[in-house]
Image 1 (tube, rainbow, N blue to C red):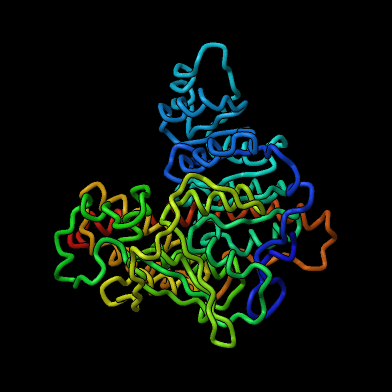
Image 2 (image 1 turned 90 degrees about the vertical axis):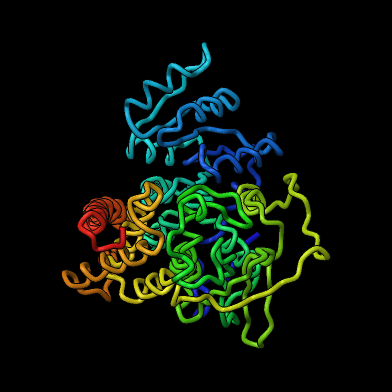
Amino acid sequence: MAQLWPGQGGPSIDYISGPPDAAWNGAWPRGLCILGSTGSIGGSALAVVASHPQAFRIVGLACARQIDRLAEQAARWRPPYLAVLDEAAATGLKKLLPQGYAPDILVGREGYARMAALPEASTVLSAQVGAAGLDGTLAAALAGKVICLANKESLVLAGDLVRRICACTGAVILPVDSEHNAIFQCLAGRGQEVKRLILTASGGPFRGRSREELQGITPAQALKHPNWSMGAKISIDSATLMNKGLEVIEAYHLYGTPPERIKVLVHPQSVIHSLVEFEDGTQLAQLGTADMRLAIANCLLWPRCLPVDVPPLDLTATALTFHEPDTDVFSCLDLARQSLALRGGRCVVLNAANEAAVELFLEGRCAFLDIPRLIGAALQAHDAGEPGHQPFCAPLEQDAMPSDRMAALKSEAHTLAERLTRLDRQSRELVRTLARDGESAC
């Protein structure tokens, strides 16, 4: 099925990995681990599995602290492995499991990484929220897995490294984000004649509003996405357009496309999930009902296309409109583009500052408009102390022997994780300090 794969090795599209091999394509049922099984994506993935139970064997399920939900999932699917954030969650989980069912319970970052590399699993759905999902993605890539990637932060933080690992281990990336899955489908069998990638954005619940109208916005209002059912963090990111900024960075790493060839358009109906424009001016768009089960099934079942109980799109019931994003009001999109251009750890700071600011907003400790202000302040502080324009980790020596390159990749992944953790922690602490000391309008 290599002919269905996006272009590789060219000036327009250089996809992050090669396609799965024939053994994976033909192996059913597929051993599947779901990192982040209790979240929105994880729940939708298990709904896909329930639609085609003969196609999958659940090997592992992981969450952070939602042990009640994890216990319910585990009781149904009986995977041999479960993973949680800490020992307290593991102790609580054991008490909730049915009698006679005693899976291995893995704990913490090391536990997530171990689950992602289990030999029994050929396929890993990386769906943990935020920077916490990076460890599992890297472990799965180092183990040569097929990774259905819903954790965009893995590429925002370490896209260069993930690309090199895939080249070394044969790991495969299948994009779960609806926008990137749409582009992936539009690029199937195409490549170097691409002019632009066009990511669509719903605009969130506040599209068209002025800054004055956004004063006093509450978390409850920001969580009411008009089209999609999503978790709290991604819903806020959609409202600020940070989600689209992170997706621009993700598209750069997934498709090897220069940032100036990645465009964002606001499309309020969320019917066209993204488009590809070719050199002759023609465009291909992927359309579908706004339901994440479609993109998830496309990855988990690839290259098969099977129904997943999602109502088909009714084109007679909607009109399609598009307009440019208002980056004067929703400045997070520009902050993300600037961070991608400058590099040097800036994307790490961008993501950490955003996660911290969103947490503060959801806790009622800062205003909606303070989110981009706090992120911008954290980025300025980082720029003052560390010039950009360089990758966060230096690239490997290209003339190393394959065995040496693998060892170097593992070492680089470890080094990156340590550097990232330090910078992430510093950035979060700075945002909390700025908010507490009145840098924001809290």
